[in-house]
Amino acid sequence: MLIVCAEEAQVEAELVGGLLGCPSCREVLGPWGHARERVLRCRSGDRLLVPRRARCRGCAGTHVLLPEVVLLRRRDEVGVIGEAIEANVAGEGCRPIASRLGVPADTVRGWLRRFVERAELVRVLFTRRAVALDPELGPVLPACSVVADALEAMAVAARAWVLRFGPRPVWQIVSRLSAGGLLSRNTSSLATGAL
Ligand SMILES: [Zn+2]
Image 1 (cartoon, rainbow, N blue to C red):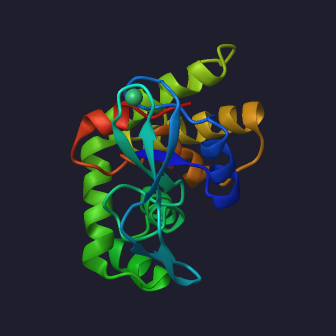
Image 2: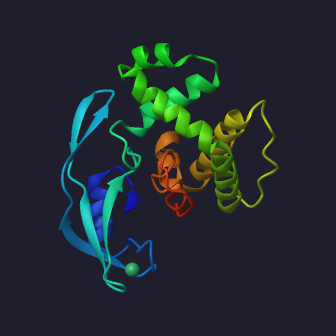
């Protein structure tokens, strides 16, 4: 699995042009059909995704190329999940967030619970990512709580990304830098996010 740019035409050009690297061995990935389709719940309504599949010319492993609008094993687009996390860190409760976003309260509760569990790991990872993107970066100042610190580290890393690669929605950068694993149970997927 590899999180890639949200623009399908660009991903296709990069894949065909041999510009995508294998997350396992860094050799070149080539096209290898498509993965099964899935429905993504977006602000604008349901969106059908048919992710591209790629095969490594080195280790022969296959990888599903997921657009950066998703997180692993989550049905909702990352921008919606991110908005819920931001609102909750700012003090809004689970139910009002859920009704505002049009998502079941249990789903929002699940996102927030997982984020709280992983906040320290997220803070460490994104601080590391931010420094890798911008070695001149000053210290990331502590906020008032572990979750606020994690949010701040993500914001700093996203700013460093934008300065280096150009504008992009913050939560899509977060998905890419966490390899889609921001809310995964498995911590190794979070740790392998590519720059
Ligand atoms: Zn490989």
